[in-house]
Amino acid sequence: MKQGIVINEKINRDIEVLVEFIKIYCSGRHGNAEKNRIAARGPVGRCLEAHDLALCRECGRLLLHAVSKRLICPYDPKPSCKKCLTHCYAPGYRDKIREVMRYSGMRLIRKGGLGLIKKYFN
Ligand SMILES: [Zn+2]
Image (cartoon, rainbow, N blue to C red; front, side, top):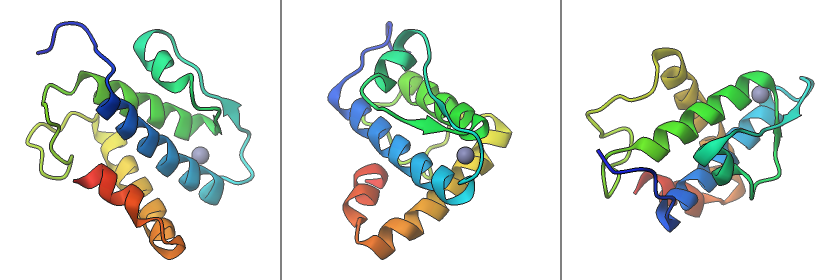
């Protein structure tokens, strides 16, 4: 395990992608749900500070889970989550993030945003 938590450029990039995917999903799927600004303490909060985003409760919790898992990922370089042997997400969240990736991935492909997908999965 790494000592402490270092937020580097790569982590920031991954988090940017996570934020983007969950944002697309939430506005598409939960358009009418009440949205709140997402804030957290500690390193997770610091990562999200730069992003001005509002999500519904469910997606907010998913994002916080995903970001905290990304921060403690012990692999460097991080493998794509699909190929990783450590399934670090809690069971419910794992299915959820897969659904988000599928949904938002399709949307991004249609909009020509392939770069973002490659950024995350390579
Ligand atoms: Zn949502």
